[in-house]
Image 1 (cartoon, rainbow, N blue to C red):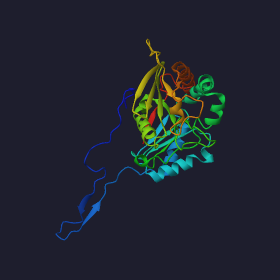
Image 2 (tube, rainbow, N blue to C red; image 1 turned 120 degrees about the horizontal axis):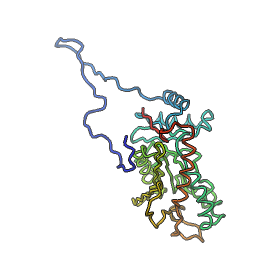
Image 3 (tube, rainbow, N blue to C red; image 1 turned 135 degrees about the horizontal axis):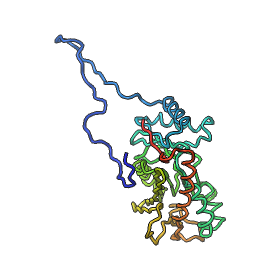
Image 4 (cartoon, rainbow, N blue to C red; image 1 turned 45 degrees about the vertical axis):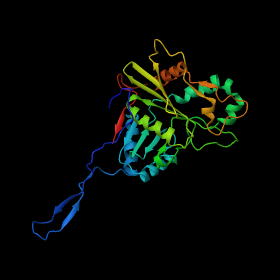
Length: 314
């Protein structure tokens, strides 16, 4: 798989041949021979037990940032998600996603690069608080952060999908959560996962009944002593901006990326006293520091030259 940060939306194969063709085979050579249908053996169908077994083995060996399992039925994915939410797996910090369109489960292990929480925590406290007021932060965004549960019930085009973003913003207006889906989502990982992150972007911006307004991707690649990092922002209207974070660009853009107050609060409206058009900056220098700190932690103890993340397919 290419590690280039440039990618296009994935497409499915267009072959007209069925994946598992049915053939006829005569029992003998007489004219009255009956034919029977024979389906050639295919790869083993994943089960919850087989997926758990593979996951447990990988956790012991601590080799892969992401595990990707193909040909997983929706009922198996849902059972696996429930299993991984149990007490036995508490504290393992395993991220879960199921894309029903591709019948694919993606698991993010604890050794995967992560910086979104520290980055956003600093933004809330030091940059956004003066713009939103401390009272608004406590009252309206207490649910924001690393999600406490996996999200499903996406719209019909993304039926049976299950996803857990790396960081979510859930506004509260009347003391209760205003939306089933977050208004702002952050996903983070390495460039080799770019195709899958584009699918995530479509899931959030197109499959949440209009609740999610902004999708942000933090994409990092590290091999030996070289670190390359980008931030990418997509909005619901289709606009997309890409910013180099590391190495720091010689001529950086004078305009910082941002999310507006209206985008943060969502379609149910902005509380009185706040300017809906006010821009909350997504500071690039702050993100650069968070990435460097996370990269030092993620690579601690790894042999020189081993990448931050490796993807294993099944």
